[in-house]
Length: 92
Image (tube, rainbow, N blue to C red; front, side):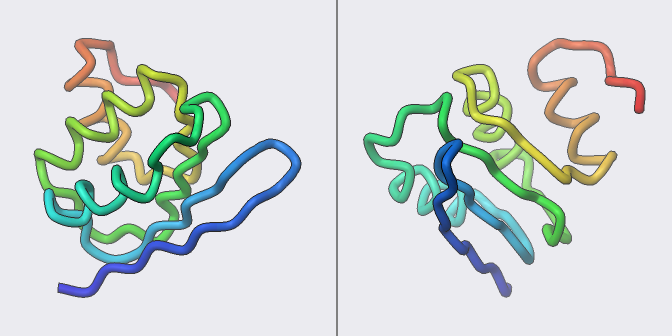
């Protein structure tokens, strides 16, 4: 399973560019990397994610509910995150 996390900073906060298959082990690693970074200043870019495990969807939903922005998210992942949070699927 190939997975990559690239961390960068900009004036608005910390960006985590994710690529490959996001499973529970990778989500746990991402949570470690977040550390003490305030959630409101974090963005996850999921533009290059190819597969997301259910446990990882739960992690993403929780992170988003705490203020993390999820950008460039594949539609199927967005619908799973919304379902996990008990929200209707967002219209694009």
